[in-house]
Length: 149
Image 1: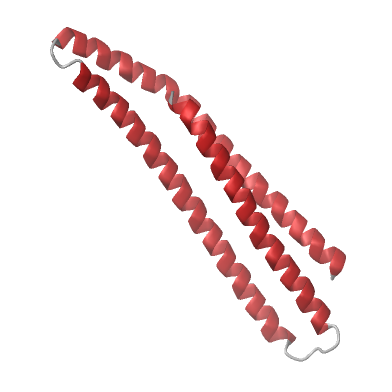
Image 2: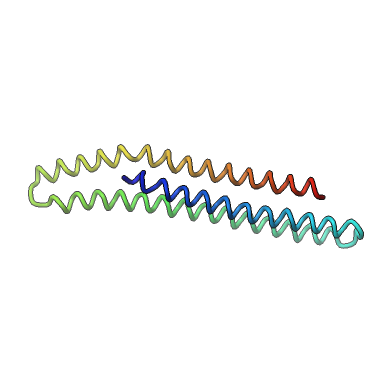
């Protein structure tokens, strides 16, 4: 059940990630092209402008990495909270009979342990998709700069 809930969450995270990186890389690419076209006429001050662009790109990458770490941290904490709630729910629901409690806890743990590989596979797929989208958006932005510079 957790894997079924995790799939739409990972889809939403990857989609938002793709849109965010596309926006950032396209903005940087358009800015660089405009900057290079503006500098074709005059060579003065180009070093300072390129340093400003480099600082802007560095800031964007720091923001992207922070966003990645925060989203992965959020997803992992939600997965562990869901596992904890499923175990706690099964423990409190069967509190009257000790044998039944032990059996339900064992079944719940077994069920949770069966879902752990699927959850890690889904999370690794999400991370792979995020890196792929980042790389594709980066390549598109660089391609735009090289074509128009």
